[in-house]
Structure formats: C-alpha cells, structure tokens
Length: 75
Image (cartoon, rainbow, N blue to C red; front, top):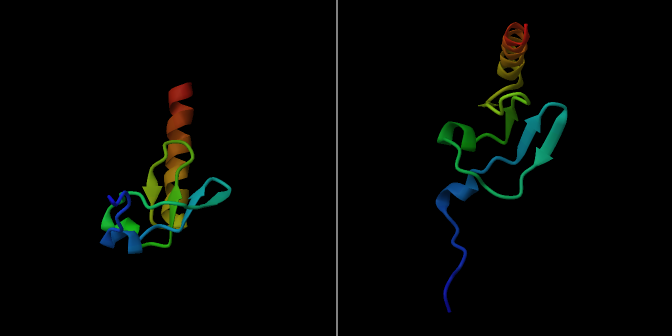
C-alpha cells in the first residue's frame, strides 16, 4: 500500500489565520511561506496587491501608500 500523504516537519509551523481587509480566514492547509512568516499564528494580506505582512501596523502603512499610488495612477 502506498502512502499518499506525508507529514513534513514544517507543517507544525503553519499559519492559522489570514486577515484580508475586514475578514479573518482560518486556514485549512499549510502553504510554503518563508520561515519568518510560517511561524506566526496570523499574517496580514493587502486586499489590493495580496502582499503578506507580519503585523497590522505594517499593513496599515502599506495600504496608505497603496491607496496614494492608485490615486496617482488613476489620474
């Protein structure tokens, strides 16, 4: 009998939640993020460009710049 599913060591460090805009999403599976992000219980995604960040503070600063950039481009 062949094994179709193997548990990897890095699955112990999987992100449990994603925050995307006003939504918090619980994850079902692990994804290959860099170690510094994979060990976090929650990561924050920009709703405009889907860039991932470690903290909500970094996300807020990024979103402000993203909105300014979009405003400039749309003119």
